[in-house]
Length: 90
Image 1 (cartoon, helix red, strand yellow):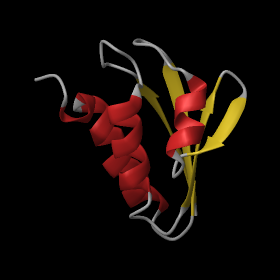
Image 2 (tube, one colour; image 1 turned 180 degrees about the vertical axis):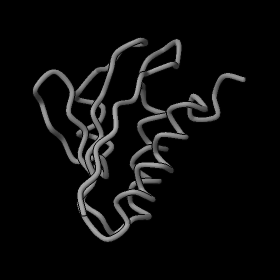
Image 3 (tube, helix red, strand yellow; image 1 turned 60 degrees about the vertical axis):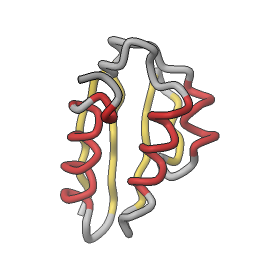
């Protein structure tokens, strides 16, 4: 099964170290292969270093893609992280 989802970076500092770490940690909980596409670059969402190389600012749109048996569950979970600003800004 393959799922895709567009998410927007809502954090005022963008996708910096703390949310990148949380994103990769949460992605690792799923069996599916999970990637992030940003401006034509596709990276492994389970790698904090890959995420940080994207240098994504607030307001930018990312495309999440998951392939595997728990793809929908993975993207539902990760989409909520983005919506919740990774728990940083309430």
